[in-house]
Image (cartoon, rainbow, N blue to C red):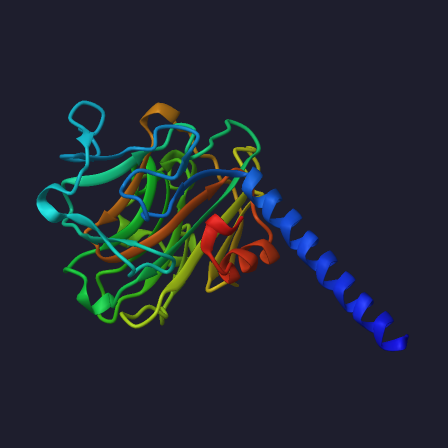
Length: 287
C-alpha cells in the first residue's frame, strides 16, 4: 500500500509540473508577436504584421525599392538541419543591400510605457566577420544612433560584442557629438569583452526593455547570454519616437554567420522566462 501511495504521489507531481510548464508556455506564447524559425523558408512562422522577408538597396530606400527575398545573390540561405532547432538562416552580407522584415506590429510599439523582449540564437566565429562593425540584428526606423535596438560586434581585434539600445538622438546626445568624443559611460550600450561565440556551438542572445517612453530616467534594459543575465542598463531616459510603418527588423548588417529562432514579445520577460526559452527542448515551437 505504501509503495502504491508513493507511486501515486510521484505521478501526481509529474502531472502538476507538466501542467505548470504548459501554463508558463501558454503565457509566453500569448505575448509572442513575431517568430521566424527558418524551418519552412524565409517567411516568419508567426507575425502580427507582414511575415515576408524583404531585400532593398539600403535602409533609406527600403520603403520604395523593396522586393520579397527568395535567396537571390546568395546573401542569405536556409541551411537544412543546421539550426539550433531544425533549419537555420545563414547570412553572408555586406553593408548593403539589406535584408529585413517590416516592423509594423511585428515589433510592437507604444508611445507611452513601452516594454518588450527580443530573443534569438547565433552561431559564428567573430574572427570570420568582414572588416568593420557588424550588426546581426538591428531594429530601427532611422539609424543606429537615433532610436535603435541592436546588437553588434566592434571593428576591434579581438572583437567586442555589444547590446545597444539608443533612444532618440536628441534625448541621449542633443549636441550630436562625434562618436569618438562620447565617453564610454554615456554610450547606451553594454559591452561583452570576451563574447562566447564560436562555430562549434549555438549561443542564445536576448534583451528585454521596460519603462520606455515614460519621459523619466527610469528605462531598464536587461541583457542575457545563454539564459543568464549578463548586465543591466538603467537610470536613463529611454524615449524612442518611431513611425511604426517605417520600422525595419534588419538582419545581418555586414555579418557572416548563422541565425535561428528570432522571436519578439510585447512585454519585458523575466529572468526565469528567458531561462525557460533557453532551455526549451524544441524551441519556440514548444510553447
